[in-house]
Length: 185
Image 1 (spheres, rainbow, N blue to C red):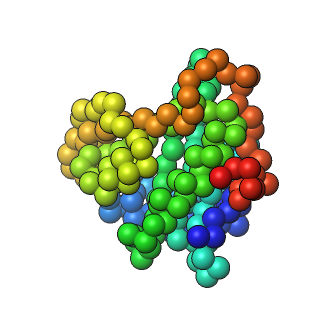
Image 2: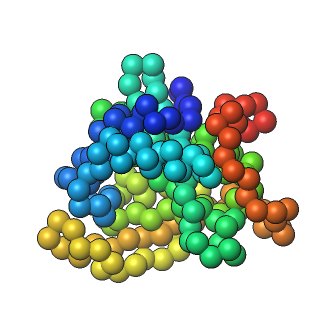
């Protein structure tokens, strides 16, 4: 699959993929879909420190995945949160899996040790994808968000990206040149 680092030029496509999850679904706790401009700012801000990848088949962006900081306190810096969203027309075609398979080696190269994913429940498709990628469930925040007229639970999954050892230093900033590089998986 043609996976590459996102750019702000992908913002409209990314916003279009994300919008239905905001306006008609519960996967996102946002209440209003972000504009193309807001999404461009998010992409640009994320790329300063973490990967944001898109699956672009040459005709359209079919999905995206990104990582972000887990928490702001210094001891959390070796952990990150990950998200993946796939266009409705590209569901069940391996797009989400391909994006994660490209994302995780980049996170290891940066020096991250753990990835976390929060999934609004119920969401059997997302749970299945994350567990197929090696994530294990670690807990549920019950009734943490109110959306769609009801309280929603968020389950949390964890993936060990590499064996535990003392870190060599803080995680490296993301370099888009690493995407697809032979030593990154």
